[in-house]
Length: 387
Ligand code: NAD
Ligand code: MG
Image (cartoon, rainbow, N blue to C red):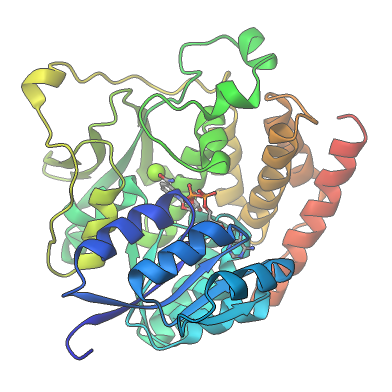
């Protein structure tokens, strides 16, 4: 056991979770697994727990407890279920925690890992969007380390000269533009969930795939970058770069612009966070620039993608505005995936919820959860009311 880094993976059955499991499984000499946490996919979770010899496997969905218990019978792997068990798993003494639950549901367990001073690989951007200031204050207070896993933020982190913070002119987030980059609003009005989740460059979970198609993902990432790197909203630019080779850039006052490049494979930023402060190998396709030949860039279109404006407005408004925006987006995306609203309704539901819910200052996580719940109720009435 000694010398190996204890690892807990929150959201192990998802896209980021499975990529993390893949990397951890390759290096049993470096890592031992404390806990694996998922929502409900017992078959995959049990298989991962056996393969990685985890100490504990947790499902958030209490009704899946019996199935998980049966699937792991005789292995000696502990089993638990329910939201409290999810938080308790994050509290176990693993040095490194992957926060890869999707949505605001990841807030409480991620915070639990932060509060015991863990090194946290943060994929779950929604928890910084809805509680960024509080989260960063807790990181500071408990001596935790937050390592970005989002590819753009990992890129920035890798070229960000923290001791030269005042010499940074801008950070520039790249965006693929998603599957509807070249499509008209008329086209987008009728797209199906299948079309929206078919991302040209990345294979990801359903929610972030829809966010990429609406470019809400980049809006969430703008807010994420603001908190992670202490950069004001007007010093964060967004440029569309359809090849997803340059993952983001930092521009310095002397005119130098530093970028991180790589094949679009999340195992690179996950490996960076997992190995940090060292680099470890990741089994990703090597970047072949001659084969790629051309890298292109364009400005995002604010008319077809209003999400970027909404995110900037929420960030400038401060307080609970971003938490309300995030909750409304989660509701709208779920409704779109359930074919209850159209694709263009997502931004309009978000905009109307942000306008309709009274914002407040956020002084505690309970404030965040209350605003999140209020925004969800408001968005639900818009969804149920037929827009
Ligand atoms: P996913 O839907 O594939 O997986 C989500 C995981 O969270 C699953 O394991 C699911 O079981 C678990 N989960 C969901 N609700 C839960 C709950 N209430 N309690 C416990 N577990 C729960 O999503 P994903 O694409 O892996 O994304 C995860 C997070 O990482 C998101 O915040 C996303 O924005 C971010 N992210 C993903 C990518 C990517 O390439 N997939 C890239 C950058 C950032
Ligand atoms: Mg990203």
